[in-house]
Length: 160
Image (cartoon, rainbow, N blue to C red):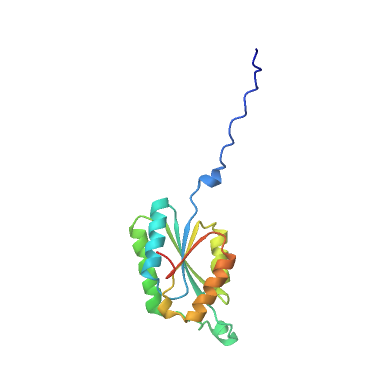
């Protein structure tokens, strides 16, 4: 009995260069400070995967024509901005590559999802302080994010 020789099989395909790149972690809030658990999860994920951290502060820009013209449409307190900056500085002190974006839009959830999509986020941590937002408003935001997010999602107050 004689065995038939098979031609050598082609080598396994190599992974494209882009898949070797680590996808960033996006930590998002809605013009209020972060929940401590959300900050902990985002920092832990970014450190563990050696991924960049993108901090997005999505601020609703009211559609009041007069406020847009005079540029007096700030719905975010200065103390909240300082708290968010402090969180960014804390992440940078850990040696992470951190990018802080303050996105002003009449549709902040859409803007947040657009940033996460453009940056090809691997994890979106939605972590505003729930006590500072109305419960119905927070629930509506989470529903919209769940429907449209193209990456893993962690929501403050919903998980370990």
